[in-house]
Length: 491
Image (cartoon, rainbow, N blue to C red; front, side):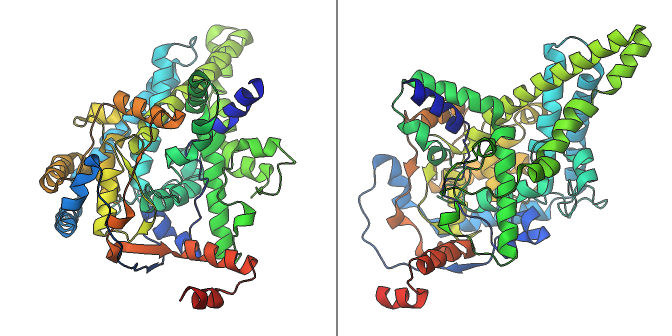
């Protein structure tokens, strides 16, 4: 029992672990494609007609759906919204920046005090909003056409050391996050290659034979640590794999690209042949984790040593102010981990959301449908409410059109809900706390997500990505079976 509990804690911190996902193709490394989440090179796949089974009661809507009509209305709405973006959208994101900077001002000017809720929450919201609202929508290209100054432009925002420090400073390397999130997650939502598929990523916890209480403990540990323990090293791994592909290296299953890459790998020198250390810890620390660790928790509060000594009359006061500041920053980091977990993990998990067994063409009817039935919104409306949710409460709208602005999602939400109601497509919108419970139920194995019946997928929308074909061909070569011969056998 003790051994099982110990084994539970580390894997429990691997939510959003890409246990089965593949990396982007070499072409996906082009800057504009990575930032805007444009589809990578692909080839369509047609399948033979299959008999359709009887649908479960909760899936009856699938058999009645006019997919083409739904696609056309969603596509037309997206085009109208994108065409209408302009100065108002830029003013809106600047307003969000002002709200974030206000939180920064309150937190930074009071962090010399003993740790308190106001300081900690202000610092936490500053970090939270810079990622979830400002960087998120900017890196998707939401303001590329509207912002004439090009400050909020995906082709340069947070790229490079100076821009990272001044525009979006966090545990993750922005270039790496763009590969993992803008491409893999957005264009493979709910599939086995989606790096954020919660049910698959926490299968170990779901299957573990321990009291549920300990599973909840693993989820709690994950909530407090996931950004630095899992997300930073694993998003960097995706960038490394993408660069390897660009350089012509073949990625095979034996190299372990689908396994979670967390900080624990650097603590296990003899971790076995099934996994691979994609990079050295010193490289990761120098490029990804180290700058934020030293900059945010050491250099940022360092002036308090001098200020405390000057204003307090002794070096001891400076040391106390510095210590208080570091404690507040550390507590704020735990809070923003929890806050972002609640707002992000809950977007695509729950017994009322679907997962899928194959890939689909971007911007097809199937693509639009999946963004709706595999996503959940929270309470929407009002900048303050949306700010606290990190604008992640418009997850359905954001996944339909990731290239739009935060303001466009506010404007489109009622229309998207109406279109879904018209075509009978489930549109899930609940309190974030209800979604949190449903997500945790998935994580600990109390519930499971729905599986979309493959027989009802539109064959014209099916496709495979280049990296999926590469992995398949590499496996065939390892088995000493030439791909051409395999095709002949299949035929």
